[in-house]
Length: 82
Image 1 (cartoon, rainbow, N blue to C red):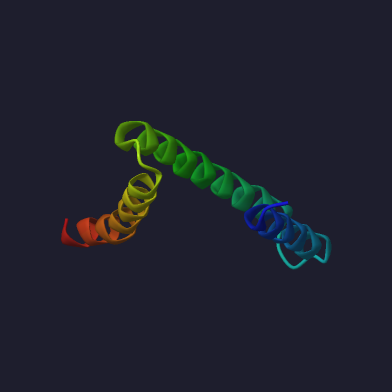
Image 2: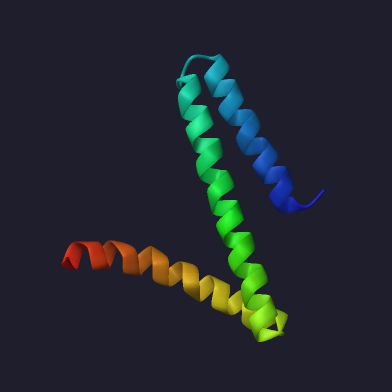
């Protein structure tokens, strides 16, 4: 099992334990899972698209990281300047 799958499984089991303990509402667990699924689809899709366009794995991974850094910095900055 890959490291990312193990950490994702641990995160889900932690959320379920917190839900069962009453620490967080059940709907919050659903929202977190939907957010994680959306980010997973976005990351996978952009990675596949960039690997098809660029044809070199290292370049595609680097561009994917740059894309997310630009989104992480650019969206809040653009919103603040608007």
